Length: 281
Image (cartoon, rainbow, N blue to C red; front, side, top):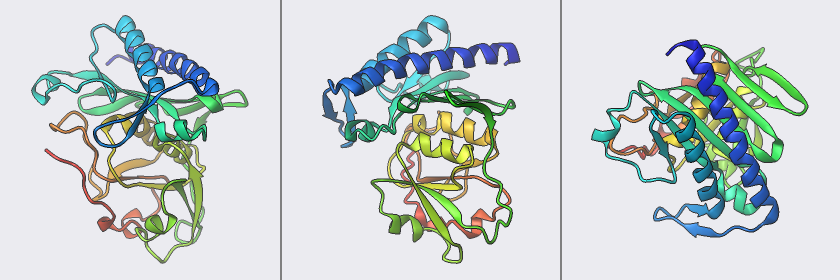
């Protein structure tokens, strides 16, 4: 894909995420929304649906030739999806539980997948007025009222000695996470909200690792993966295999982890058995 085209698509994704984020923030501030329970027992709200509507309309208008996969729309058959050479992958609100709990830690995720890999990622954090973005081969960036800069993962001066900072959910038992890591290291924790915001904290060097247990979809990792990789980190499945996009009947991810500094010997830190592999074919 030509660079000029890629930059135009990035600008479209950024504008779309910010627009949806502003509307979601208005709903969040008003408290005027309705919550529902999905079949998998995960929550969804009227704000998710409104954000989805805005994003779908804006992307369809700007790029009518690019298909869209969203958490809040029906997923087509693999046979149909495999005809896509590139497509938008969106999570209208990542961190719906945080939205409902009013922690403020939720985000709008938009990724562009090309040849089964994320090549563009945008994550907008409405309450923080912060936009994270990346374009494959061009680095990762953070834009907010107090700083606009390229971001990098934290480089540990003594990879085998410095405490590792774990991004951890406020609703996730600390003991479960620590037990999935080598006992030979010292760890500190950084409580955070949505999955994508934890990824961004690693990308900007505020944390070193995040372990994700439980069911997630490809829309939860697409934008994060592009941003983390462009900042110098990685996202891998629990068994250290790459995550896949649009290659299986299911779009459910296995348990995965996000790692920062690549000088750290992660294979001796993360216990492979931490994953229960939700992936299906």
